[in-house]
Amino acid sequence: MVDKMIRCVKKHLLLLLSILALTLALVYIVFSKALIAEKDVRGNEVQIPTIIIPGSTSDQHSLDYMIDQLVAASEPHSVLKTRILEDGRIQYEGSYDSNDKRPYIIIAYENSDDTYENISNQTEWVGLAMSDLQEKYGFNEYNAIGYSNGGLNWTLYLENIGEVTHPTAKVLVTLGTPYNSYESDDSVKSDILNDMIMNKESLPKDLTVYNIAGASSLDYDLVVPLSSVLAGKYIFQGQVKSYSQFTVTGDQASHTSLPINDQIIELIVEKILQSQ
Image (cartoon, rainbow, N blue to C red):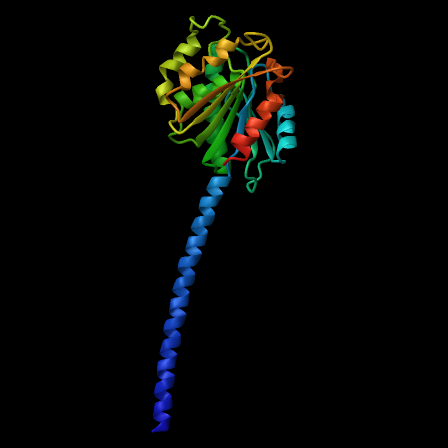
């Protein structure tokens, strides 16, 4: 009788232990999946490169001093430099660390001449570079900086090629960009400005834009008229999530000094490198 009771207790105990083990296994599986999903989400959030396009007559090394200033103001990041040849081939140098939260990428061109025709060609080259970069490194979002004509490249790219199959732009910072070419008369709109205004509704609606002008003298940065830079408002205002424009003055307000202007470096660190 006692043996029978003992066997019965053992049987029930074994059943309870089996149920407990199965429950723990299910909890472990669910918890593990949740951790993996959370890790994936975090990975997508933090892997946001800053992609920089310099201006005309520049190459992939022209903004090294800007990178140095950003590193000095924040922290080191990997730097990948690209040079797009006129036949569409892309040359790479430097490194892209997949564990780096804010890597830098430079997009430069073999032909960086300052003509509207060539700027249009550069728009297509940016599209080639973005497709190749996404395929190689798998990022889904990025922040963009365009210095001088580099700002035109980004604007035309975002309007005409867009983000159907390309990564999503979160923040665009443009420095001394001649949106109205070299027109100093605000009532006269250049061909390139008219074209960008015509296509402005194609801009990403979730984009945040900071348009920065320099004023070494009263109305220009020694290269681009102030009114031309500020004409960016005709393109972005009311089309993107947020549009802000700033004018810097002082010793670092000339066109060539904008990429190392202390105020601009601080803004990039705050709005791009630390805020997301």
